[in-house]
Image (cartoon, rainbow, N blue to C red; front, side, top):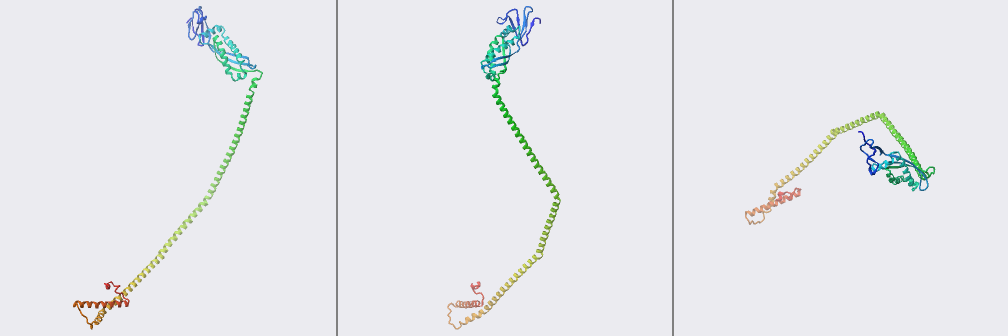
Length: 370
């Protein structure tokens, strides 16, 4: 649209003419949106809000009086608030490149002041402290001209030809060199040890390989020897088995012959001997029986003879009573008792005769004892 202006995202649009701006500024500030501007009656200018850079290379003197060349880089920009834009616009709108020049000069002065209060050792070891102090001391001054600093980087500190920094770093360099030499020596030693270990490993591997090869060759030779001896060994083993079989067969034949001899000779002889023994025993038993029978027959004949003589004996005993004067008190019973007494005497005489003749007495004959 004619007369409608829009600033870029990193710009601030300054409109002069008409009513005054913030804080009595001679222009109005527009950012982030467009604005209708009357031609001829209003004038529009643009102020950059982008990041800018300023380099500083300043000779400074330390607290020890050592001249140093310090190089630094400052990153800055116009503040986003209206007051900062108004301050920067009133100072740099017509020549915005002067922002970097002025910023470099401001920081150069602060660097000289702060480095003069520090030693070279502090500057070398505490660069961040230097940058922080420079930022803190320049913050208020930069705000007055509408600028803010995002960062300050100390790039280098050089003492020129004085050699102070080199001398200061000499012990560290020596220590570093010494450590480097030690590390190199350790590395060389480790390398030598590694080579020796590798050589030992190779030698051990070669030895093991030789041993394995020798074992393999020995196994091959042993297998070939066994293969060469397999035929004769098999033949000898077969012959040994044949001999064993023949020996076993002969032993079985001998055992069979022994059994046959036992069956043909020993058993019949034993049977004949047993028969003779049985016959002899039987004959002896027969003779014993015959002898006992003969003896028994003799006793029976003797007993019969004595029995046959018993009446005569009783008669003779009775004849001794024929002239005797015997009184019979009991009549017939008394005569019976006398007769029984005579018979008893005859039996007693008979036993006496038997004993004298070797015959068993009355005590051997249970019937006589009764």
